Image 1: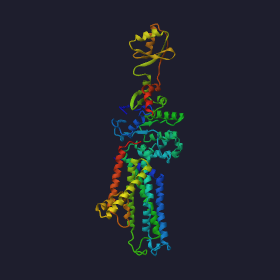
Image 2: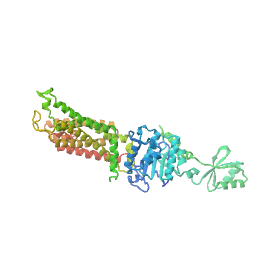
Image 3: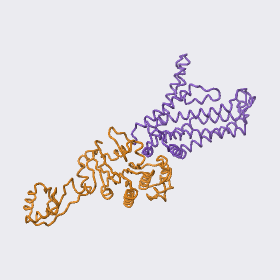
Image 4: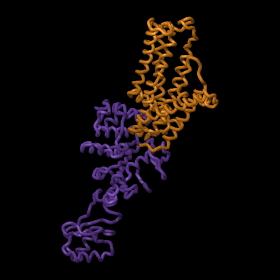
Length: 289
Length: 277
């Protein structure tokens, strides 16, 4: 990792995205003190001491591992002993929907159940911050939705800050209010999802359908760079970027110049568009043997 | 700084150690060793057919509670139970490092050394409990069946070991077990697999045996330094309990202390610096 500077604010449900091998898990292990850093600092809730900063942190790194011969409940009780907090086992089991199987040995759990138990274990110790690495791995669509709802509830009702790494872009887009995208150990983009998806900086991309393309291009050229031609969109429409001018003003300018406007659509990017834009597919392919 | 919840961490490790196969196996073997010693002594004490140099086994063998406790101790310390203790230690450190459950403890607000200390305490308690079981199930039935040693018992007049000497033997065995545990913990952090720890320790002890053989030969050749080095070999340090019925060698205990301190310090330093998978 190089110059990775993550800014997770209190109350965020922060999505940490990146291609395979980008360094997501390494970053999380670094944050949790499992691997040594060459340089840099981790500050959690204002605490920089590597032991004390984990007091308010619950975590799940990669596939959660358990003492398989013990029950789910016993595994959480062991976690309680290490967290220094002996309450919340039953509540955590209830929240992840495992209370009825809590007395069964973990060796009989499915992958999805183990994932839920891992989240329950992260909730042990009344954490203020949850750090979860791919929490919906191995879950069916219903399970994914339940975990998504649970994480939202933890942020909304319990005022937790949740940091989630995932490669499921739609999942993160639906769940998180802020995201960071990492590639090759470097943070490529970070910010509120709505702002990142609206466009880069102040530029808003718009699909423009007109009755007279040459006349429209002349109007665009006369805007002194406030409207820039980005390319062609579907159905013969133009793709333009607006900077310092809003959609209504563009519409009026075109109409005043005698250009009929047949379509004027703000282009909403998906997180997938943004992800592909800021991460290099070629490099990702080269990385694979 | 010791975490305030350190006793609970120890409790968690105890729960793991005593529910693992190696822990349960060690307790069972400890009981079998004790009862086996009682059965063997009962058989020997009543055996009028087997003879050695014209004397029956019943006449040769000193039959009393202390002796049966000593037999049980010798049997308990011979290979099988130390192997189970080794497996229990390696399982709780190398095993958990390999299957990544140690990671789940280390992401909690604790210094790394405390995770190691809680594990060592838990496995040491297993050693103590096995000694207690072996001692109890051999000595107490022995007391009922054979009684305490009295002068004149047996054909050969000897100074019988006393109950306090036997107790010291059990205590020395505990010290020896702690040495074995410290070595296993250190190896666990280097080798990172249960099987690897067992194989590595066996190889080390075989090398130690060869070194002891050479030193013994050198001692016979009146090379003074060899005799001085002998108590410092690993095998002799771990075998410090062996002099319980006659006299202990203080140098062996000193060597064992060095082994325990060095291995614990090395293991703590290693864990504090290593990247945890």
